[in-house]
Image: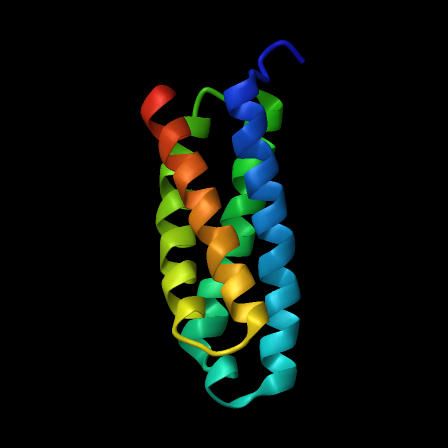
Length: 114
C-alpha cells in the first residue's frame, strides 16, 4: 500500500470516523424526533456518511480521482457540521466537530491531489 502516504492516511481515518459518527448520530436523531429528525438534517447526515465512505474507498484504491471526491466530501461535511451545530446535545456537537475535522482533511487532499 505504498500509495497511502501519511497525509492520505490522516484523511482516510478522518473519513472513516466521520462516516461512523454520522450514522450513529442519524440513529440518535431519528429516535429523538422533532427538529432532529427533519428531512433536511437527515439528508445532510446521510449525504455526509455516504460521501465519507466513498472518499475512503477512493483513497484505499489509490484512485487518481480521490482529490475530486475529497473536494465534494469536504462540502458535504461542512454542510453536515452546520446542520448538526444548530441542534442541542452533546451528540450533535460531537458530530459537528467530527464533520469539521473531516472537511479540513479533505480540503487538504483536494488541493494536493487536484
